[in-house]
Length: 432
Image (cartoon, rainbow, N blue to C red; front, side, top):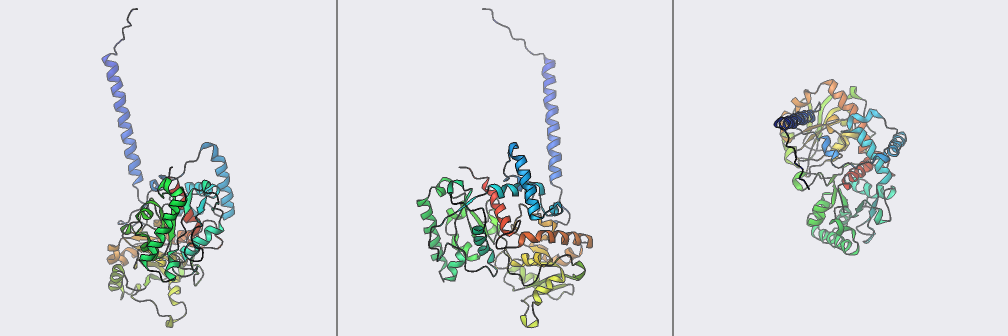
């Protein structure tokens, strides 16, 4: 056999190939640079010290939809929009409105949750004691889940598993934090032993809900529960172990509201800013000390005495443009939901607060988000917001109100469905 002699490429061809590769690399570099710069563009009305969540945060955990399912999903979107009475006018409050509508419809069709039924139903593992008060969100979630179509009796169909621990109910029985921790630990360990579902993901597809700070304290002694499972909590502060890509911020909503929802009443809002409350945190002490005697900011370092009149505190929300929302003993505050309900632009003063539904809602479109250090320039910052910008914020705030309302039974796009959507996003990162 005669050997076949391979022809070597000419030096000109090699140079041409290298030149093409180099050109392609340069084009790619410029393309990524352009995209990066474009993504850094900040939205209007955003404080220089605040950080806006980017679309990448949402996209990283969004479910993939096969091409074959697109038509069916689009039909579900149309049906859901017709049922909810929503339209594209709401788009201004979302990071990615089309993606949200698409995946919200997909969630309604497919999302299933298995609720563990073990435990004494008369004590700890059922609906909390009441649906009123500043920790009502916990009770509403328990009840809404039972009223919804998300629950399945077949654990093999479940996307997530709900551990129904009501530490709020335990506290009502006078149980200490130490004993609560033991009770929860024994309960979770019994689930590990009896069922195979926790062990196959080490709890990554399990979640529990607690709005009361006692629930956070009672579960901190269980590292496997805190680090592995999804925590749906009302105190989503980064400095107490909250993990944004895993955990979910539960809005703390004080229901029933004392007065009807405000909105589309800009002409009545003549006060620049308002806050009244206890000085039970450093930021509140500073807020009261710096602005208590200001003539344009209505700042009181104590709660308004009921003897001054009926619902005086709530009525002040109606007359104010911006309602100051500093954290108290915890980073969260029911005042944020109150402000939204009464149509007053919430001014968030916090360094470590993962705001509810932050993956979906663009808070900078209907709120003012500041760092705690901005409290010293608070009035100057608020006065720099033009009337046109305030009107836009107020208009968007009214559109966001439905997301911060609990209902029984739950209604489309209310607080319960938004929490379920956040859980739906997170279940897609779990593989087993």
